[in-house]
Length: 262
Image (tube, rainbow, N blue to C red; front, side, top):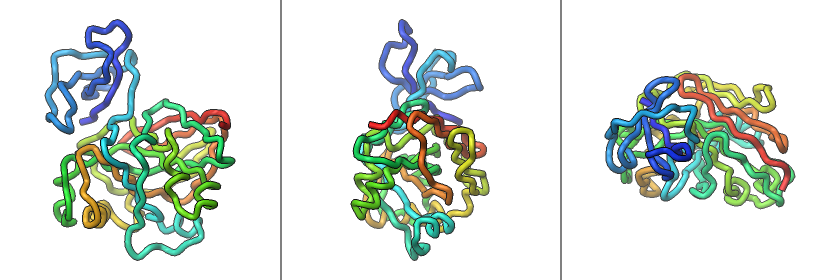
């Protein structure tokens, strides 16, 4: 089941506020009552054409986006470091989240803005100290992410908060798939029609049970929090005015354009 968040078309009887829905097929959305993360999945009678709506980020975290760094061996090497002995985590602000087809804004402070293709986990409930054997109990579903990074700022700052925390630097979407099971699916990033990143999800150094256990041993996760599970080798610059596509086999495609330089 794939759950979308969308804005109804102008003049719709559904109003103007964002709604959630189930993607019933390639062309239609079944409208849901409320936010399924908080009120459960309750279909309404209304069905609306997919082409008539604007698709938004499937979740706007009310708290945080927790990210895992250097979680693929080749990426750790390309960044000039060793594979970590335990997960390396950092946080992107929830204000960095945008949806599919939204524009990544190039900050005026940066000369280089990079793509980082990632699988994202959406958390379903308040959780702390989750044992690896219970990780599925706290997952609502999966979506696609691009951990956009101002690489020059990351390097000059000596830490990652500003370089990864600009507004628009966390595209998510196009939906949350609650049935997706991570395995050996292919993960790619395509820039200007050329594949730059290409790996399998099972090449992660730390798997999802380990990641959730590690994060929740340090901090409480809340419903709607998102975990970015790391990016493979091949990260690199996106052109100002260009386009980036992040794909995960069996999950979908997240497309965003990049603005002109700030």
